[in-house]
Length: 198
Image 1 (cartoon, rainbow, N blue to C red):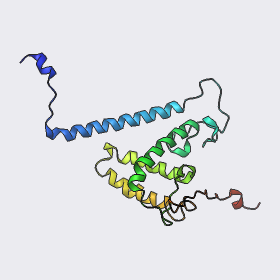
Image 2 (image 1 turned 30 degrees about the vertical axis):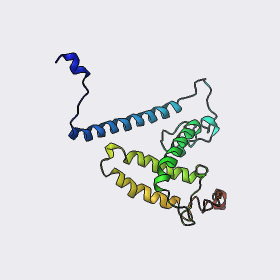
Image 3 (image 1 turned 90 degrees about the horizontal axis):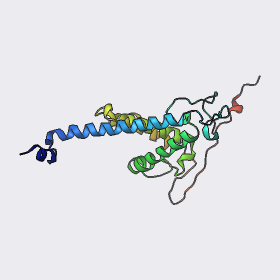
Image 4 (image 1 turned 180 degrees about the horizontal axis):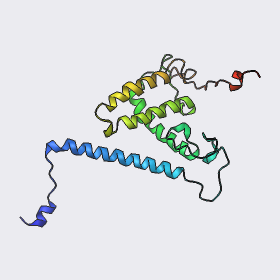
C-alpha cells in the first residue's frame, strides 16, 4: 500500500482508549471556556480608552462600585462587579439558572418552597445563585475529581437551595403558585435605625 493511501484512511482508536480521549477533550473544552471567561473579564476591567476616568465611586455604566476608590475589585463574585461586567455576568448566570438549575433542581413551587420568576431583581438571590454557579464550575471541572459533583450537591446545592427557597428567604413575599404570580421585594433593614445614640 502506498503512503498516500495510508494518509487518507480514518484514524482508528481502540475502544479502551475512548474514555481517556473523551475525558481529555472535555477537560480541554472546560479549560478553554474558563480562559475565555477570564479574558472577557480582563477586557471588561480595562481603563477607559478615551482618557476619561469614571466618576469616583462609580463603575462603568454608572452603577455603584463595591470599592470606594472606583477601581475594579479583581473578584469574580457578581456583587463585586459593576456596569457591563455585572450585566454580562448576570446574563451568563441567567442562562445557567434557567437552562440547567431550574429544569433539574427546581421542584414544585409552594408556600414552603417559594420561587420568583423575577429572581434577577432580588440581590440576595443573585448573590446566592452566583456563588452556587461558581462552585458548580469548580466542582464539575475534570480537575475536581470524580467526587466533585457529589461534593457540590452536598456542600453547595443543598444548603444553597434551602436558604433561597426557605419560607422566610428572599422569595418569601413572592410566588407561591404559578397560577397566582406575585413579585415583591422585601424591604432591607434601615442602617440608621441601628445607630447608637451619641
